[in-house]
Image (cartoon, rainbow, N blue to C red; front, top):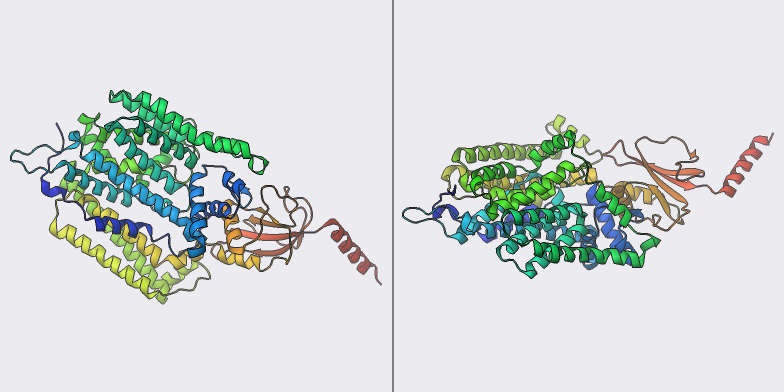
Length: 591
């Protein structure tokens, strides 16, 4: 028997404008008005920026101004670089690169909504017919579930940061969601075109973040076909798989023919893929549980309940398909020893879809518990953000103000009236939503998650508006990069460096210096990164990879980071060194 019994009044869909507004409120804060930030954001932007201002070799061999970055895949960086070329002169390169990030988020959100809508209007997913009628129409039930899935998706805590970074993460999770949508279409109406589309997206996933997860998805789909007793394996094996291989093969063939910088990223890319797999160990399970609990909140409780409530209809597509994806991604996450940023991202689309089917079956007491948790936590967090902002703006309370400003030394508080008004408006809207939820006790399905997603959007908006200048000051390299640029010699050949991808990208963009390319050698400047300040003017050699004698001409650090220290050296040529030694000897020999 189906576990759902609902009246039509419980399936009132959200207005389209409100869903669109929620998505904009979610994605725009964090994309606008900031520098590339330390970490994956700056590193990804560096690859895109290098491609946009380079040639075909730079597009085929991903690198950050000479630092090879063969991991993951080139597709997300191609799209970001294309946006920079099209819009960089109008809105600046960092903001242009984030257009690709925003579009990927929209693709992922739309895919989650439509996937749930298609599953929700299927016959086996419909609520039981009521004795005197009044049950919802399949179309209305599907739309309401889709609204709930999107709200759950936006409310997932683990989606916040990755969806706003210029990295492969946003495109990767968007393609996962889109592949779910195409798989539903394919199982509903198997045909060659559907299998071809699945193969195309599988190939794009490989170019985005390697072949491990796409291969896992293909195997999961084959197993699901057998489990549901649908003979679709032939389509997947002989249409989807060749198309995926063709997409990836086009990139590999071009690499082989062009040989960018007389080399290829293929071997390093394959090694990175192999590192994603390992024997299951206890530490992996602990890491998965420790981070997965908050990463997938609030989706996982609803999804777990949906699996339990629909356990007697486990072959139904609305349970078996997202569950197959979820099992695949969970298994690969448990085998992943690298624990790289975003390795849990693929879990979110299938979790959000499954969670939506848990909404109509949850008891009112459980829904109320989740709501009250969201109200208390999100309202408390928003209150702390407001209190902290008032403290460092006004200087009172003095202790709180000093503690916050010590987190970003050198920062001077700024007051922006428009930002303040917008933050007030969003806070008022939040309290209106809370009042509506508590006072009216609505029966609509998505009532259980509107507070969770709304609270996440509220807190994110407050952080990315009121606190944005302070955070930008802390995690941006703009000041230290410009400081170094002012100390550069008038003429130099190039700069070698011992920097990470994030730091190298930031220094290249903000200071406009010329780093050594993949085929450049014998640079006369060297920029190093260390955790301890080097004392003295001459050191030889500075690093075993850069033999010779070097003279320090600049040293500095970000005010907000006491551990990270940068030093710029100039190479002392042998003739110059001999002249200096002779001069010192003559001065010593004089009576």
